[in-house]
Figure 1: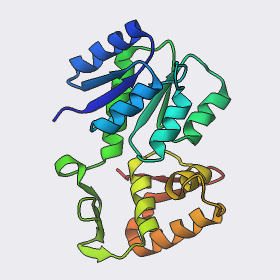
Figure 2: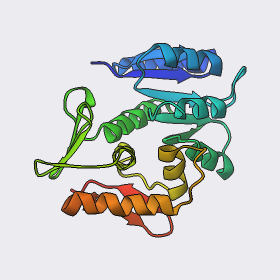
Figure 3: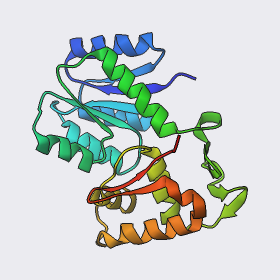
Figure 4: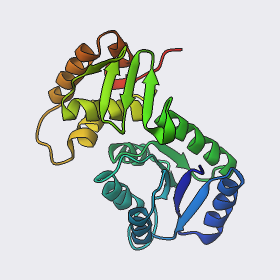
Length: 226
């Protein structure tokens, strides 16, 4: 099955250039020239990954990213001509997974998109329904988690937290980012909520809790050993 990408870029020549490279690698490409059209396409189609320009008419990329993150954890790569650190931080705070600065090589962009999809999908079964890592198995279709064949009882938030960590396998996630992404921007709790849930999740996973790593003064990450 082809992976489906939504390319959001107002420069027609740039959009066509990038599209050609993705199609050569057997991606199915949906194109949008502005933020409003991007949201319409996203709502009407099954998209696997979004490449999103920031400076656009109608609705900028920040707004599009924010709206999509309210509904979905789909991988997002932001592309922009701006190089300021604050912009990079803004992108990650809004839930972007990668950040590519113009000018860039379309070939490299495709490679990063492919790597991001593999990282997001993990070791999966049919259409991403099953994730396995050591003795840990997450059945996304059945909404179950098991260790060594034994089903583990997780609260809804513990389950969402585990999926979020797995989705960003190998990436250090600040506690603020985890809190905003899993609990939502309107949640009024503090960062100790994340720490408490991580502790409970590790305890329930037993030995397989080792994949959830603490990164001192940075946050947490899910890291597959090997």
